[in-house]
Image (cartoon, rainbow, N blue to C red; front, side, top):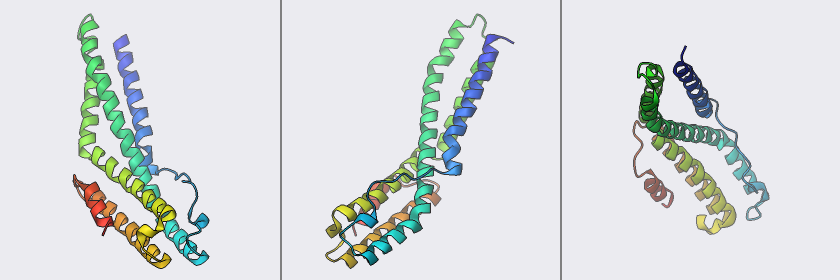
Length: 201
């Protein structure tokens, strides 16, 4: 076995192991990390209202974990494809140039080229970039809505009850929007603009 064949095996092993790491959150999800003071620490609302807010958060926590897992997984796969494409763009010509005979390095070149073709096909087929943006934006938008309610509740209404109802509606609209994007074969290009318009009404 030549050094080129050994390198082909090593490359394949690295590619598979790193892909498992990247795809892991898509299958098993990600943990949520505390984001600072929560509804229980908010003095804008009374105890009953804080309880309702906390219960609403508990109900959507599973969805947030799902969004985070998808956003993390798609982000990793995106950068996985970008990184290996960059490596292959200079590695294949370099190997072809330095190999004494092209036949000696054919398995290494074939391994790299096949892997990149597969990775790019996966990237396009799974709409990796679009899904990464949708889930990441959905997660970010939820925490932005939370911060706005905690910091400037009057943006949601004049009374605490109006503020809660507006907040619950915003969260429900966001949840439906991300679900729709997830189930569509091709997420809309202007999803950020559409979501902002929806949440502002």
